[in-house]
Length: 129
Image 1 (cartoon, helix red, strand yellow):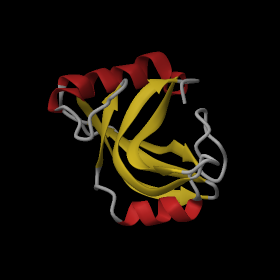
Image 2 (cartoon, one colour):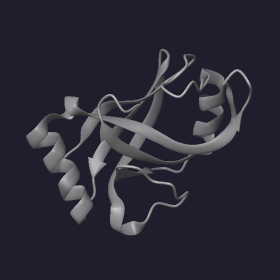
Image 3 (spheres, one colour):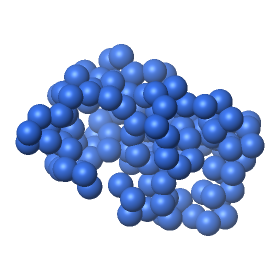
C-alpha cells in the first residue's frame, strides 16, 4: 500500500484540548526529538503503550509543527487494519475522522503537560478529540 495522506492535523498546541490538557509548543518540540519514527497508528482506543501488532493500521511520518499545531503524513500499512484505514479514508471520507495522540507525561493543576513522550496515534471519529 503506497497511498499517502499528507498534512494530517494531529494536535493543537498552546490551547486546552477536549479534556483540558495543554500541550505547549516547547514541550512538543522536545518530545519530537525522542519520538519514534515512524509513529504507529491504530483505529480506535488503545490503552497499551506498545500497540498490539494486529491493530497496527498506518504510520505517521514527517512530524512537524506549523504555527500552533502538530501535523504529520499518514500512510496505510499492508495489514488488515491498514486496508480498513484506507477504506475508511477513501470511501467514508477523511473529514469524518480525526487523529489523537497516545503518550505519557505529567499534568499540573492547570492542565499543562510536561515530560511528554509519544507512544502512538489513533484514528477516531471526528468530534471525539
